[in-house]
Amino acid sequence: MEGFGGAGNYGISRMNGGSSSRVLIGLAPARPGSADVNPSAWWRRDVARLLEVRSGLTGKALLWLEPWPEGDALALDGLDPLFIEVCRRVRLSEKTGGMSARRSTSKAARISAKDAKGNVGDPWAPIHVGEGKALTLGERGDWTHKMLVKLQFAGNKREWKVPFLAEPTPEEETAPLLLVAEAFARGNSKTDGFRSRVVPVPKAVVKEFLGERPVSVADDLLKDIAAIDAALRDALALVASGGDPEKMGKQYYERAQPARVALRRAADQMFFPELWRRVEAKADADFGRLRLGFLQALGDIARQEFRARCGDIPCASIMRPRAEVRGRDRLENRLRRAMEPFKQPEDAHG
Image 1 (cartoon, rainbow, N blue to C red):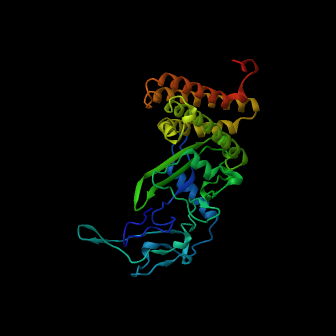
Image 2 (cartoon, rainbow, N blue to C red):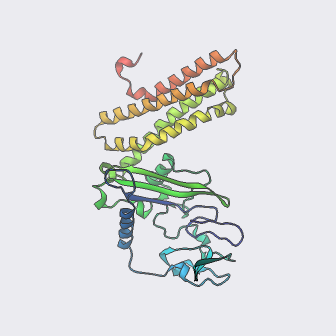
Image 3 (spheres, rainbow, N blue to C red):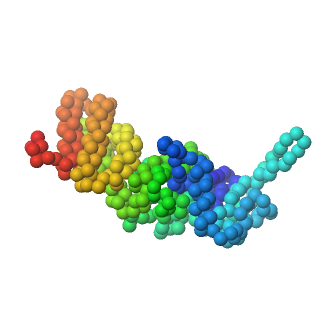
């Protein structure tokens, strides 16, 4: 997973450039009765799937066994698609009493694959449909629900091809699976930590995992979250402006950022359980009940964040009572608007 580390220290070919990251997205079996990955079953599953589409060795595979003449690079078309790469000149030697290592830089990358942009056949790598490049989890990046929806549940708007090992097989439609996303968040010659997220996928939705229903439900969920987020943003920005909507501008909207980050973090934890519940819903009434419950729960979090952050927002003391009342009214009005489709007739004027 190493990237560019300065002169003479090249990164691997399975990423889109030396400051990029190698991404793994795949499905894994869970340990019975838990949401933990079963490592041995995961290994067995991936090997079996890869063997289904192979017809023997088609090139160099274990690249540390190959000579590495100075200045030379291996041609990509001479490698097996599942080659295992090394990008540093490190050699171990056995000596009396133990092992020793020798390390050196190189004048060229191990593999000549710059133009491939990381698209070299890695079965865990999302590939951009239009540009043919491998995904990078950038510096300060993370596996948010929005990122995973973009990669797995984009439907006709798909920008990224789902990796081969992130597709369920018909035999897996009767067992729960785990969606695993992992990578180093990488920037310019540095990393921002290893990012890993495991999302349980109930067996009831595995069959529809890459179908149209999760796509449409995920899109509705994102819109619901955006509506609550906008309500909280506008309410706190109104407080920051002293309660004067005519003065609301960028500097006031920025005051809402800490509360919005907290709201999005909560929404991120709620997203996938809610997505699976809605995908499983069979009747419109069940779907509507779930959606209303989600909006109410997220709305309550928005209210909590408003109360917690309101007093920290700078505002002239003489204007604060007006600002807070108007901000609170703005929040409640926007929340009601987000939930209007679920109002009962008797509540229409409540």
